[in-house]
Amino acid sequence: MATIHPIILSDHVPIEVGLEWNLPKSQRGRWYFPHVLTRDSTTRDELRRAIREFFQSNQPGDTPLPTIWDAFKAVIRGTCISSVTSLYRLKAEERLGLENALQEAERAHKLSPTWQNQRKVTSIKGKLQSIYMNRAEVALLRLQRPYYDGGNKISSLLARQLRVKQSKGYIAQVRDESCGHHSEEEKACAFRNFYTCLYTSDNPSATAQERYLCHIQLPQVYRDTDEFLEAPFTLDKVREAIDSLPLHKARVLMASLSISTGLLRPSSSLT
Image (cartoon, rainbow, N blue to C red; front, side, top):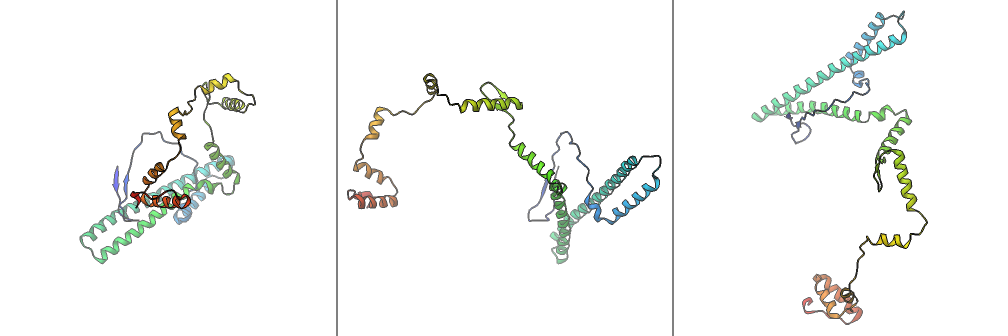
């Protein structure tokens, strides 16, 4: 599913692409009281009516108070869910209506670019911007909800940060010469054996040293290479090296060497 949305917040056209994944549905988390209900007068009146009717129909008597309390919570939760669903449906209908109206207004403005059509397009875009900003605010609030929920419980926040830190530093597997170890006891034993053998004070035997060094390929210097490295520098070699440098660097180097030694003279390629 792909949809091209109208231009609202920027000069770019937003494109929405929906992908359907055949994955098992995740379990729903803990239910929270929707904060949008506290700002809706109709929902507050509905909650007052539901509370009054419930206690009129359920007087304390033969039914235990814990049972009445659990039933009351279920009724209030159902009322809140019904109100939130109705509010979300109304907001979705309002948003879709404004988007359709914006498309019609932009089409009319394209055919007849008048001041009235431009003002209508700007007015609809302003309403849609307020709706989109409200949705972004709700999304940010959901991301920060764990910190708001544990704001007065410092232990909860610290425990959550500790779990995140432990998960980042967790070692899932330790592998030694034999195989890999996954259990906590085997990993601890592998660490202990490795560092015990690593920091031992016993000097290795000559046989162990030869066995270790025989697998290492150390760099070697052959006879002809040794003679070439120990050969003295000549002035011709120095001039050849200086001539291979860029012109501005070669002139600076030649000047410094001429002043310090008095032996070098600029070659024909540098003049």
